[in-house]
Length: 427
Image (tube, rainbow, N blue to C red; front, side, top):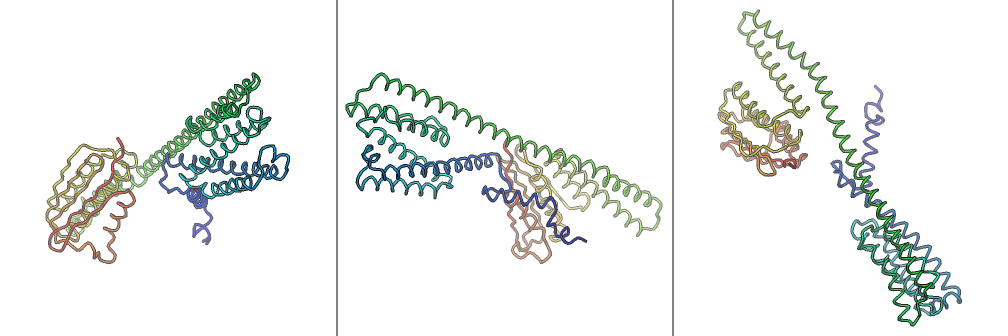
């Protein structure tokens, strides 16, 4: 046998699992990721990528700022002379690096990025308005305001979040008036022109962002539907194959056992053949039950009641079945877990507890379903399960996997009660 194949190291399925695991770990998601979680992860990754691009843009601006500080004519034009200019420069550098360090945090990254972006915008407004000649609406840096509008729209495509860069233009105009600068007709046209460009940028980017987000949500939803459809189709295919193959074989076994039983006269042999026929009938009933679950054509309450009656007829045990509440929607896995726990509980009541009576109750509450199985057997200590007995362990694992709760209440001489509850699916 090929060693690698035996260990499952190079099979396509394992390669696919490894890729899926890698993506889930990178995005910090679990195997049971929902469409909402996938969308949130995508939005966070998109924000981080755009915020990193903002950091690199800041580095370019800071490089230009350092060049302005180094050239006396330029620093004099903006009034950036003395130690305070360098303090302000290194403050921008520090908060830019701090922003980069927290950029991956889902909440802090967004708030810190927004705050630092507003600080950048404030510094830009000061630089535009500060020169007494050629400043304000005449400043060559005024076009930078369009860049800030673009950055805010890309990172925070919400109306209120985009407000700061839009307010930069009227604030600049107001500063011109406070500094006794007259606003000419050409400057008024410049103001209107920039306002129009701002609204165009905001509309286009917000519109495109919403279209992109909507398309992504539709794709994620479609992928989930296709996955569910593929599972349903595969279940139906397996159900057909099992029914036509294993089901036919069990049916033939039952017919042959019945034929041999009619031919046999020896009592001991007849008893063995009758037991064989009964086992085959139980197996084919279990097969049919599993096929109904696979095709999602299984009615839980009726299935549990039918099994309790069949078990009562086969063992002679007094089993009472009770159902309360309005039936709720459950997943196939949840229905199977409830059925298996009833099977295990009744089997334990016969094999180990030597019970004479069992009370089974299925109760539907508003958002959960509860299965309670109570017997009058000899009881046991749940904390001291014999080695090699995995019934209780299997029940606990089923409960844990489905987000359910399992409580086993028993002590020697007092019988046992198994209470299992699961959340229902939304209506």
